[in-house]
Image 1: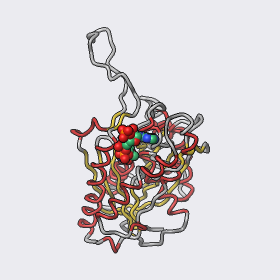
Image 2: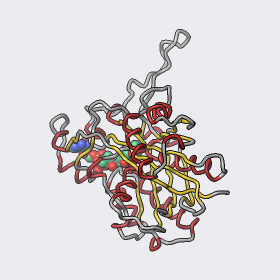
Image 3: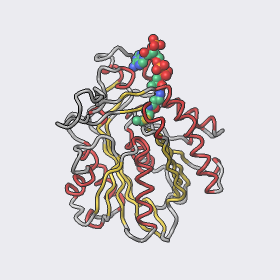
Length: 327
Ligand code: ACO
């Protein structure tokens, strides 16, 4: 079996910044409420670019960072809950816009855990010797599925994309990966697709009546606080490491209170947990690769640094992975 490492990272967020005060003009909320309950100060909201547009810009950035051309990419995986269309997959749109002619392409949906699911899938293809270069992109235009009249959700989300290039390697850059799901809890965070509507369906068929995000925030909070620390502990156990060995934990950026809680439960130094949700809000599958790219480009990572990425989201799903930085 071969090894895998992250050979490049990239990100792109729309230019349009929407602050908490801006939102207070359209729903009954305040900067004080949003900041104190979530840590979010502002988010980027697209004024026209769709998910594939954000994904392509993040992917180009990652390829540049890796020094690998688009023609060399074997597979493109886009993790998203906000595709441009039902079909083609966003990954196919990205393949075309990048000119990655030989790449296979598909989307996966594991909500905010989607990027970690993508890393898991991409890693298998490289470890088994099938492919050399796999682009894993988390890209979202959540503003499409947010209910802009619902103050309890519209203040939390943002648009953006992050990407990494996974490449074959002699050194072990991607280690243990955990992905999990608890479908029985799925109804606490939903956004419906089209209802059944055809000449053969009865008139009384139940329609959900909405296709935007509906969330039981407290239930998601409970789930998140338990799985974040458990997933990190499991990865540490599999790698035979302790928190002292880890330079950074890069958590899904949903709520700073969830991240603080996880750090406390792990008795970890909170400064090891990278936080940028104040600038972007919750960008679902994009949040972890955006954060990873920020850390990388700020020059905070040295060769051999040990990182854990960890997330949770709709499904409900959760996951974590161990990375050892190679540059
Ligand atoms: N502005 C002002 N008041 C508000 C707002 C708002 N934007 N939203 C809700 N309120 C009010 C509520 O109506 C409620 O008022 P009431 O007491 O009069 O009924 C009060 O504030 C408290 O509401 P709660 O929902 O109890 O607030 P809580 O402290 O639980 O915080 C939050 C809510 C931030 C959503 C929290 O539960 C949370 O972060 N949950 C996790 C959510 C999450 O992570 N989601 C995404 C994960 S999955 C994914 O990323 C797709």
